[in-house]
Length: 364
Image (cartoon, rainbow, N blue to C red; front, side):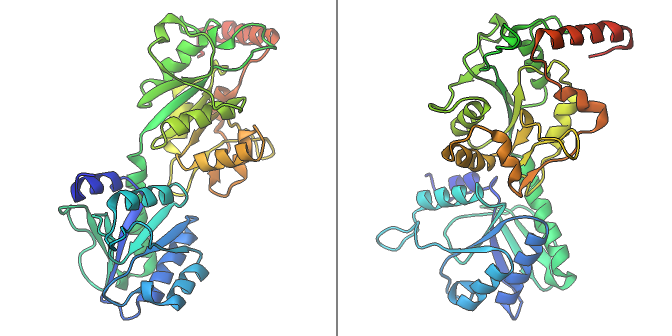
């Protein structure tokens, strides 16, 4: 670490906030009301308590119990300190990074020694302060009601979420046994292969495209990064887990290579679905259909769900849709064709016939 400035930079894009409660007679009840309102928005909060010279929730078990009763978790951190009692910034940042992968919002109370984004609840005062040295502070007036205060906090949380880069992982590791030849090398409708078409669509919409799997790659894509499947794991789970382990600080579009009707509008719809509390977007064609896991968006926190699936001995990434933080909306009718995959020569012939029939109307 290079001092507080470097630490602040590492934490500034995490859903971690130093919580200050001032000018309020009952700190504990105010904190539990704040947590309850956050939970009402379907978010998972945790309160991380540090010792403080002033009375706070860190010194009262009943107040911590109230936070738990409101639906949040409480963690009293003794770890992160050296043998001499001083806070070790490296260890503490690691703690906060780990918590941000398991919770939607981390509220730090007491003195931790880090310069964090600060959310201040007080009676009276301006709503928002400009950025200050070591971080940003935003102020909410408790007199306006807790719902209004949490709206300010969650708007800030959304800003931080949207700063997380979106990368794309294209799966090319399938055996294509039903097709009889590698599907990602089939001729596409834009003059290249299906894989080249897919990468071309993704390029303008994400910060980086990587390939997962051992399939052959056209010369034009030889410079793309390829991630090695997780050992002992097969199928799409091996690819997405490899990508998330390799680059855990970004969110991912997972894209199969056999969706020749993929379109920018479908990708934009997935990217726009990001919200605080949504760990993934795994859409459905209809209310009673399975989720379409091979064209979806996966927040960095989804890695823990995939690791659990792996440890359970399963390969079905669709199992992640059972988690309450996974969003499974219906696909809008106008873009639903993007989720159609092609597995057999007969289906490929049908696709070609459809394109010939619709060629004069500007089909994709």
